[in-house]
Image (tube, rainbow, N blue to C red):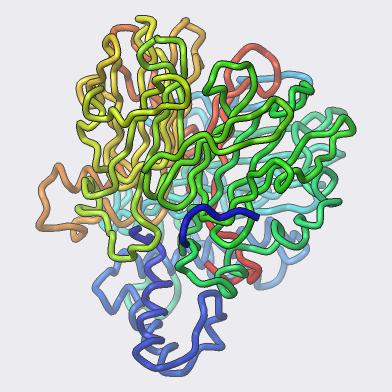
Length: 607
C-alpha cells in the first residue's frame, strides 16, 4: 500500500446540534444513536430546538399535522388489509371531494414500458373539472386502491412541498401541496404512480382534533407500467461481480460511518461523505472496461480489472495505485498520447499523474499542487493535440469552519485549477492565463467540457454548491464566464452536470444536478422566511430548493430553462449527484439517469 503524503456547510443541522449539545452535557453520543438512547437532558434540548411552534414556524407545525393524516392514507395503500376499521378515522371531512383529471394519454410505449400522463396543464385544471365530476371519499379511496390492485411489495410515500396558510383563490384556509409516489410489483412487472396533489383542509378552530381533508385536486399525474414479459432495465450485480474479492466484505461493504468510528479524522474522513470518486477505462488493452475506486484516507484505493467472465480481480498493489491518501477524484485518460489510459488521482493536497505501460502497470510521472480536489475533467482546451486537466475544489475536509458565505450565493470556496499539458508529463497551472479565474471561488462539485456553441473548441460548465454555476465559453483558448448572459448560471445546489442533445436538434443541451428539498419548497415561500431580505435574495433561496434544471440550447449562444413547474418531471431528482444523459433503451433519444441520496446508515431511523 502506498502513501505519498502525510496524512462544508452541512444541511444536516440536527446532526451538528446533537453533537454540540452532547459536548455541552459531557455525554458520549455518536452520530447515528437512536433518539431514545440519548440522555434525558439531550432529548429535551433536541425536542425543543426541533419544535417549529417554539420558533414561531406555525406553517411547519400545520404541515406536520396534515402530513400525519396523509401518512395514514399511504399506510393503507401499502397494507390494504388495514383499510377497514379505524385506519382512516378522522382523516376526511364529511363533505370531502376529489377532483381528478378528465383523462390521461399514452405519451410513451415500447417493449419494456408504457407511460400515461395527464395532458392538461395546471392552469387548465378548472376547465377539466366541468368535464369530470368530483368524487366522494369512498370513490377517492377506491380509485387510489385501484392503482395498486393486485400488486405486491407496495411502497407509498408523500413528500410535502408547499403550504398556503391563507389558502389559494377559491379555497380559503389551509391549503397544502404534496407529491404522492406509489410503486409495486404486479403480474411479474412493476407499476409506478406519481401524483401532485393540492389539498384543502378543514381545521378545528379549537384545535382539539387534527385537520381533516376537505378536498384533493390532482395537478399532475404520471403512471408507468412495466411490461410483464420484459426484462428489467437494470439488475444489482454488485456481489456477483465483486463478491469474490476480500475487499468486498472487508472494505467496500462497511459504511463510511463504520470507518469514521475507527480512523483518525485527520486521515481525511469527511463528515458529509465527499469521498466517492470512480474512473472507468480499459487500462490493460484487453477491450474490457476496468474500474478505479477512490477511498477515504487510511483505506487503499482499488484498481479492479474486468475479466471475460464478468468478474473483476484486484490489481491495486501490482499496478502500484493502492494509495492510502484521502482520494475523491480520478480520471483514466491518455495524457502522453501513447494509446493507453493513464491515471490521474487526487491524493489529499496533490494530483498524482501516473503513466501506464499498457499492461496496467503504473509509475509516478508527476504531481501537481491541487488541494482538496472534488472532481476532474479533461479536454484539449487549446487544440494542440493533448489533454489538459481541470480540477474542481470545494472546501477543505480538514477545515470544519469553511462555511459558505452567503449560503445562497457563496464565493469563499477553494479555487479550481486548470493545468495545461505541455507534453512529456509537464503540466503548467494556467487558470488565470486562460481566463478561468473569473468567479472562481465557488464550492465546486463537478465540471464537464463540451462544444456547446459549435465553434470547434471545448467549452466548460462548472456545477457549484451553494450558489450560481459557471459557463465558461472558450474563444480560441481563452475562457470567459458567460453563465448569466447565456441564461445558464443556475443559482442552486449544483452537484453534477451532463451534456446531451435531448431534443434532437443537433446541439448540446444541459442538465444540472441539484438538491430538491421538500422542506425548502415549503419554508422559502413563507412570508416570515428571510423577511428582512430583498425580493432577489428570497427568490434565490426559493430557487435553491427547486431541484434539477434542464436547459435547452437555443443555438445562438443562450439557453432556455425548460424545467417544468411540476415536480413530477425533471426537477425532482431528490438529492441528486451527477445525473447523466444516456440512451437507456436504445431508441435514439437521450434519457436521464439521476442518482440521488446521501449517507446510507445501518439504522432505519437515522438521517
